[in-house]
Image (cartoon, rainbow, N blue to C red; front, side, top):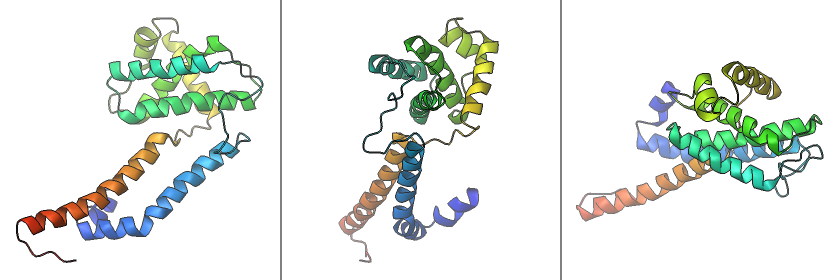
Length: 202
């Protein structure tokens, strides 16, 4: 990764060439991964709903409350922006995986799943992640002990085949915003140079 930044990060012309060459491939790859993930569960990007599995009895209202609660947890622990998006993605993927396996889930399952989702997301993303003790004491308020947190962590990782490289809307946002910032900044630099009377190559 450091070599990559050396190659395309120091010279603006190199970065410009890299973006022009690979931007469509990057976006297409993101969409292909997202489509492949969704097709795994028998849906498509146009109509997929994570709660639409017969064994799943979790209501939309409960999922909405969990998503809001995860924001509060991430804010309290000063998690990175992507941690929340990844936590929601993990939570939804847990529902999908359990549904595919025919394992019944109800609203009472939501809280424990949310705790494990944000715990895993933080470990994956944050420099100072949420610990198993904090997940037990500060997040679950001792409803789940530390040993249970670790047991559920192993169970969830096995459920995902130890692959937490999940795409979220935040990944698409970062990709698009990087492309936009680059395209906006280049004309802005040219305009600034014109204002100060510098020669600008067009």
